[in-house]
Image 1 (cartoon, one colour):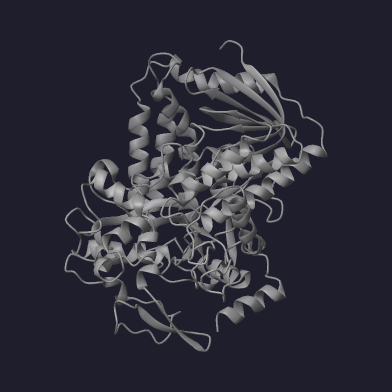
Image 2 (cartoon, one colour; image 1 turned 60 degrees about the horizontal axis):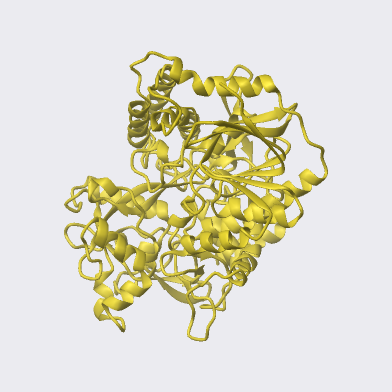
Length: 604
């Protein structure tokens, strides 16, 4: 095993996306010795794939927008299973975080009078998404990194964390390895912030990049933290479906926000067929303007393509299953139709959606200013994750914090588009603030050398095995079963089958062998990822099996309606004393009276 390098910090941030960078900046600015540990290269975070915009009630395009409306939209989109304290923080603080990002150099698109431009997005009552064309996440990462390099933050790139270390009940560090050479590292810290993102790589079709294997959720679970609402996995309605090499790559909701419409193989704009009852007095008398509905005492219009993501994804799957799919098994997303209706025509589309134009031109040889795109649902985002306190972002394990997609609470049963980027800024800052406070109020914990050696021995075990079990094949089988049995549409017998398969695959994972040595060994990396993928997959399947209703992103074919008996609880997963996965239900915390009044007023 050899020696390992040891590093000592006040605050360790694991993950260098938007949440991790913002947490590290906050921690460093509060005087803490801060480490930023990332699985990939700095700048390669999955945040760069968030294209459409950052939701914040600035009110630049529609002055009626305010934090109360944003709060109500977020709660409604999450089917009221949200941590309402987090939703309140988010709605109130998002405008300040966007303006802060602008002050740090972010170059947002502008209105004619020079203010930050905002666009429409699904589930938002008003144009709310501050954006940089369709490259908003990339600009966010660029800005945060440019700001972070002026702080006293030590960055450890291409380092994968394996296991959290504890001193009694509190965290005291983390064991890790360098991906390039396979050398081990130990990071000691008074506080740790998880900002590792989601677990889309547990599914076959996903917009998520290779890093998204549930590392943070799994490490937290095995350290004694609770996971929450893992049944709620968002399937984005529009991912690329052709060619196969890029299947699942995200097609931003910004395409629909700029006027893109969905059509089936018959050319019909099918989203008009099933407008949810929330929208009253709907009519399809003018497809270009959308359907009419009442909003308070005023009439409003909304394109049906901008209904919530769960609804749009299921409608697309319905068209595919009923034989009205595009040639490659999706549907058509058409932005070219607006070319003759807007000044500038094709150049307007290229200006508004430069990344999408480039993506389809390069990867699919499709010019989106001339012909429709072929799209279909893709695993996109985890609403569930590590359970955290709504004010501090700390888990039930002292000293362990979480922010961004790895943490549960803000989005409830379904996330609204654009809320992810403002989530990273708001709760990255909060996690960094409270991690720094925790570190300032506590002494360094100890790390057990026996635990460290055991963690590294476990990591090296695949090299000691003579086995025909292959990590890539096990991962592929898991992804296929999760996609088919715990995907967009779920049934009891299929989820029970999934749990049995996961149990079998866990047994096979323990026998995986790898060849070669630790240098540049992707087979070894994949073998080490399997524990995390198995953990989060089992948590998703067990949570989904327990919730006997359809709500938000969780759709049960055998329980297709919302059930009042299921409406008032969140689902929790924790590790039992014998290592078994334990599931429990906890009642939602009642809303404060003034927040109840806000929601009631917005529903009028």
